[in-house]
Image (cartoon, rainbow, N blue to C red; front, side):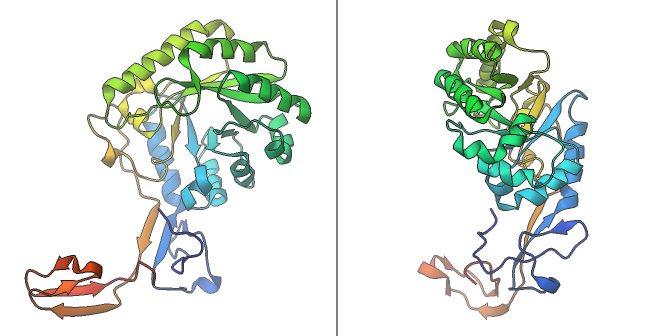
Length: 319
């Protein structure tokens, strides 16, 4: 992960199509190390992902925690130009930041929002459907209706169904009744239904069981699901696991950043070729020395030279 903004080795990119989080005036280096963010690689990766999907499958770009520390506004702007159909963040505050990019696609808030206060600055975006909320449990239906009343606008919601992740979302037995309640509510609009795959990167059997549970719920609730409701299931590893998980939209974080397939355990039924890493950590050698056999190196002397060795010092810690 990138360093915090307080570290000394922040630095801008000096290559076409790239930038960094903190660009000093005049492009001069503040220290000896820098992170390089290649914005052009983001668009390339989205094209590669798109080519692996059926034409009617959308892409939701996940930008939690300030786009994983890379700068949500600039990353969202590039993804917006790349034509993604939705963005996902965790909190309303993160949604506010992402909306500064003047997006053409809606932003889904994944966290349970149970009070109107965090949404007051988003009232216009909520009314226009540019910010959509996740519904997590039975009580949440009533809470979101209260929020809609206080803000004087209906709310677009996605119902999260817990099929095995055991974190957020409504249990499968209760989910159909919640979907019906949203369908019947004059204050809520059902924009999506989704689940989150827990082990798609390494456990095909459990992933399939989750998908089958989700299918069962969708069948039970079919009469209350409008035609334009987006059904989504696959994260990055779910996308790679197979087309049966793609449904109406895939949610990707690692893939837009150029990572994922190399960590996938097992046979990838969906192949995403030629991804380009968006992030590169660059530094330089500042000191070289020769040491004899038996010399201890580093804190705790945890490494010892087994032969005459040339050492290079790279300033990538607290430098």
